[in-house]
Every structure is written in structure tokens, then in C-alpha cells.
Length: 104
Image (cartoon, rainbow, N blue to C red; front, side):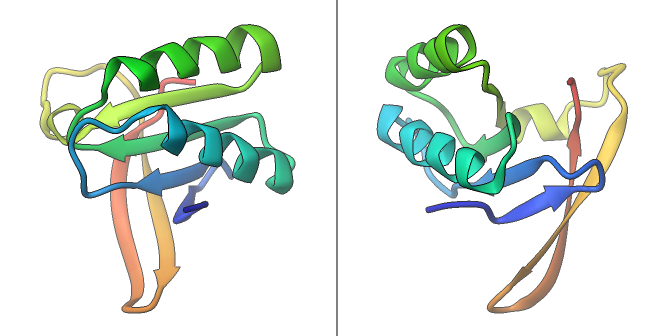
């Protein structure tokens, strides 16, 4: 649990291959953001539970951390007017590229 990659703008990204992501994932990502000295980041997952949305709002209001929760469906939409950025991650399997919408 941490940072899987960065956007070209330097925003941390975490990718979860899970449904119903909860508050604990956001808690850990918030800690990773602080350690990296960042206040903006993205999490990509299949879906989010209410705890994740509540923690996202709390982090924004109380800690000034801006975490965008994206779903795979968001990534596949073709009707967005948001600029597109690429995330390059160097992991165990080598470099991987993921394209996401940056709404910050």
C-alpha cells in the first residue's frame, strides 16, 4: 500500500484491483502522500464504499489533501472534457503506463 506511480505532473497514483474500496485504503494513501510531500493524488479502483468517500471529504476539509477517486469506468468514458495525462509506474513487471484524467 503506497504509491504505484506518478502522473507526469508529479501527482502520486495508487491502483487497486478491488471493488468497494474502504476508508483504510485512503488512510494509508494519505500517509503515503504526506511522506512524499504531496497534497494531491489519485486512486483508481473498480468501486468505492461510503467510507472511502467520507474519508476523501474529511482529508480535503481537515488536511487539505486532494484525493481523486477514479473508477475503471471513469477511465473508459469517452465523453469527458478533462485533460489526459499518463502515469508511468516501474514495478516488479517492468514499466507500465496507465492513462487517466487529471481533474486537478
